[in-house]
Length: 385
Image (cartoon, rainbow, N blue to C red):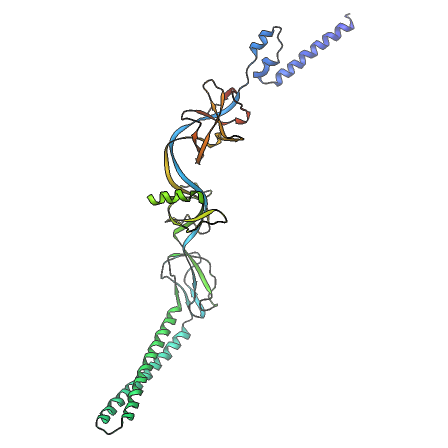
């Protein structure tokens, strides 16, 4: 039988082997040489593997970059008309459906015509009566004129007949004017669209009484073409005016969550003053909008294209970091070490940033994994980057 002390020593040694096996199973294969024991110090140093930071990279390239201003804009109707009644009356009928496209001159509403027609007939009867009286007065004036020339009646008597005829002539003109006015009122009983556009909802339904120039019957928005209004920081005003003097400026409107290409228009208006409260200036672009993609009240992302810059060095925007000393990025050198480069960054366009200084075309820049990097760190480039 073995001594108790010898059994205990063997048990401890077995426990150490078991613990090491469990540790080896839990560690990654790349770290196993570090966990192993070696009887030779030199052999341990040879087996140790250096740590590399996994990163994704991209190449800095030279390309033509658009110089543009990106802001938020709001779609506005090209023209907006609130259709009102020009005379009081009951709305008899509507000739369109709500939300319908209408043409200029298309009939929208009719009012009750009967009161106006009755007034027109009354004026026409008055005209007929006064014309008959005028004919009689003219005949009397003519007859009495001959009697005056013959010396049978006095001048005062002749002047009375002549004045009566002239008064009835004026009455005839007044009757004709009243008839014309009644015809105008009768035309107001038919309410037509003053523009091409799209109608909104009924503000007043048939059967209600419309007041003169007070009751809005329907609102019509012209949306072909359409405006997009936006505010640009005043720092860009000089550039916008500079390039606008050369030629029309293209304006793109990107609709959120719309995968189709942006709507394209032209800058049409620059306000005459900068808003001192916001430091921006109002601008407006015109879009033909043939497919009605842009809708009044809609918010869109607006891009004002000013010019282009050829041979600009660009990198993915996510590679550019911001530190206490300014903008920087990491460049992977040929020996697979990371180098920190301070850079001067320009505008960002479509996920790419222009680098004015600090990077040259062809340089390999780190796009992901910067948090684990330090100057001189070894890197392991992930596949597919």
